[in-house]
Length: 436
Image (cartoon, rainbow, N blue to C red):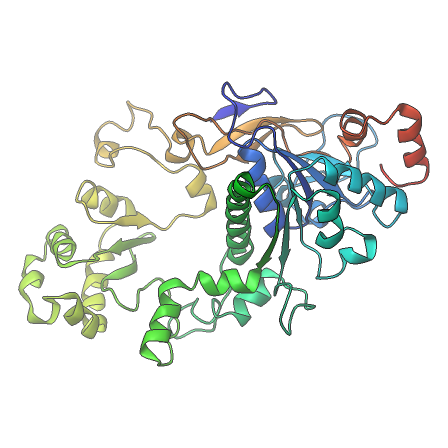
């Protein structure tokens, strides 16, 4: 596990020099702007001056405060910490005209604005795209909502789990004979954040050609439909009702699911005839390769229940680790089903060595070897561990340059250094409770 700090990367990152005005809260928007921050953009996170981002109150768990005085208890929310690295916090109320004026000045000096308010909400504060684009025609303005800027549901609030339910994901998720369940992480929010960050970077390229910014309309509902991928395509092509929930299994590939071992679960994916042959050999059942019921994937799908029952009888005879050792270097996809702590300490290295030299060698950790967990020095919580940005470049080194900010940590700095306000002007805004 490496440490990260506020030092600048050795080479300029691809978005270095760009400024993002982040008017988003909770997950989809902050996840989008965090990606932009990871890639070098200066991200100014605009927060309510008293409450801050909603997720500051979402806990436990919290990282405990160990520094400073008069810091709210119980600490910094793990949820907030997960999506707000590489940002500066401006605690400001735009319910006040002076707050709107500050945001107008910042918008003039920004390249990107991202917001996730219901359509037309920001128009009341003169912060809508039509108004802001007149102040800065080159600005890329991205709006993230549940159901988009148009359509009959545009005024409905959209939370991830509601959209999962309404747009099909929950219906196809869960055990074969059980009720629908939500995905274990807010995947619709996250994919919307990914789509939006991608759209923003494409708009930046477009601006380089036209000199103009534009409005991006990103909806959780649209992104969820898009990520139904092959499931949606199957329904469109066949014209038939979908096949429902499959648990960890696949509707069109067998065997492709998790199986219980003597002490856990392991997922195997024999996606073609060759890989099925590998599985048969590793299970010491080579005769299965020549069984008419299993000669092709089509045959295996037809005889799914029989084949899966046969595999289950073999898998239950050994531990998960024994099967991991057996499948190692076989070329067949396989994985233990890990909990979160298991994921964050995932072993990296040949599994067969674990039986012979585990007491002599310390294995690299896959997550740590890929630098996916780093330690940062938080201004009030001290050293904390965070998940790092996942992308690696040959010429850039994205990293956590700034730990997630405390509420209003950078208010004075932003007003002073970007808007050239003097101490009296800043003090006046604080006295009016415009900023904190």
